Amino acid sequence: MALSRVSDVEKYVTQLPESEQKKVVALSDSVAKMGPGRNTLKVNKLTRDLYEFKPNHLDRIMWFYDGETPDGRGHIVMTHAFKKEKNKTPSRELKRGGGALRVRYIQEREAAKNQQRREVSAKRYVH
Image (cartoon, rainbow, N blue to C red; front, side, top):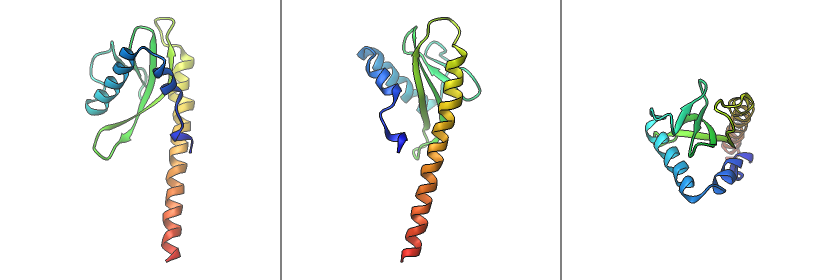
């Protein structure tokens, strides 16, 4: 299934210096536990559903929430990463993170859930 492949975000983050990789992990863990917080130097809300992590002044990692994990933490889906070249986030990056990639993720998630339901249903009738 496509959701389990190594993501572009993971590839991007592993190319950052180790100190910044640790920042990304710490930011995502903190946000999953306590929400985005108020430090807009590290985490910024871009639209109603789309946020960005800012491990440094150039790199950006776009993400959104997808419900909660069984332990009650926020489930964060990182859509993509890029180097920001100007003060304003490019509209193509907003559209990509909040649109196409988010829709694709939701479609793949729903397809996986439906497949799981079909398998459970088929097992019930086999007995």
